[in-house]
Amino acid sequence: MDKIIVNGGNRLGGEISVHGAKNSSLPILAATLLAEGECVIHNCPDLTDVRAACDILRYLGCKVKKEGSTLVVDSSIISKWDIPEGLMHEMRSSIVFLGPILSRMHKARLYTPGGCEIGLRPIDLHLSSLRMLGAHIRESHGELICRIDKGFRGSNITLSFPSVGATENIILACAVSEGVTNIFNAAREPEIADLADFLNKCGARIKTGTDGTVTVEGVSSLHGCEHRIIPDRITAATYMSAVATAGGEVLIKDIVPMHMKPVISVFEESGCRINMGRDSVKIRKTERLKPVRNVRTMPYPGFPTDAQAPVMAMTALADGTSVIVENIFESRFKHVPQLIRLGSAIKIEGRVALIDGVERLYGAKVCAPDLRGGSALVVAALGAEGRSEISGTNHIDRGYEKIEESLRKIGADIRRGV
Ligand code: UD1
Image (cartoon, rainbow, N blue to C red; front, side, top):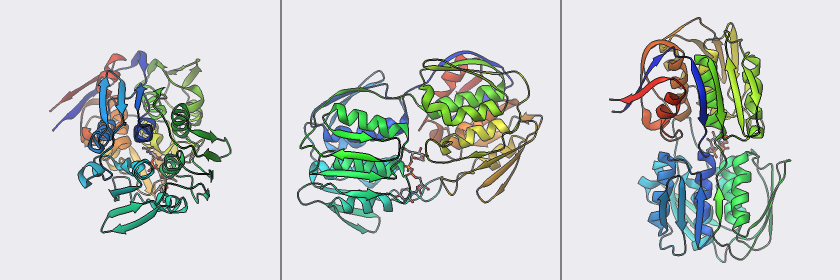
């Protein structure tokens, strides 16, 4: 089994680029099904989740070509309307294919995603919203058997929680539809705006408001387009956590500064020096970190749950007690026992983590419990004394493109081994 081997203690320096956003690539790849033509998507990261989305597109009948970080998807001919259970479980967010398959084929057969490493992944908001738009959905032993009579019809939908996936599924369902759909309390993550941008380039009429309202004026068909995926703000936050933990000064390039706002204040509170550029951020850490008092994960523009684990790894070395509250997922502290193996002092009380900063972390053998938990272990290992071996790299590869090569370029002693 693959491992990531880190000899901690090197200060980091130089420049690092951020790849395209995983969480934009997946819904946009699903959206190519609606285009009935060729879509050219630039800046697609080479991640196992993205490959799984391409496998689903190929299974459905699309032609998918990869040219470097550009994916060319031709969805002129679609021959299937189901996703087999194996493919469905390769990627947790494959439920986002339900809206576009139903829209294009007027029938769909998928499997429910089930639980995963970070807790239950309910899809009730996806299903109730699609039903409001006219879908008939029957659930039987984990299978979703769906049809729609003459295509989706616009409606007003108020989400009880601004779910990212449900907002995407609704947009994907009603981009091609009759009438207007208003989504209230929609998710406001930058990846939603990126999906809307992509679909608008294909001929859709979607407006995303900053107040959490999305308006979709249905059109009768879409066409192919060319699009560039936005940078991955979580990967950027992970690199920032790495510099804050290991020390040094690094220029993180190819970011959208606005998207980083929810995390920047936390790095500033910890005593890092931050300089924002037009499409970059420079982070410098020279002294021992200060604790952070109030990190609460929230829907965007709040602090992202996906950055919680790498930021927790950084607070492990702070001079005092940090407090992190996880409000989005029920079971997203699975990295804590692994961080404790590296020498950190963390107590969990329900949704609250209390991190008593220690002076040193020590290398150890640890196992990535999930994607972001895995990146937290890499961050902690970079700041630990001695050698760490991180197994469970399959989780990390779902969201970070060749993480060891990127971090080696800025001076980390990190490699892949067996
Ligand atoms: C997306 C991101 C993920 C991120 C999360 C929250 C992708 C591919 N994944 O996941 O990285 O951590 O947003 O920012 O974009 N919920 C329900 N019912 C539903 C749907 C969601 O109760 O029908 C709950 C979930 O259990 C969770 C919360 O809502 O507690 C947030 O989920 P959601 O925003 O839907 O996250 P995802 O789209 O799955």
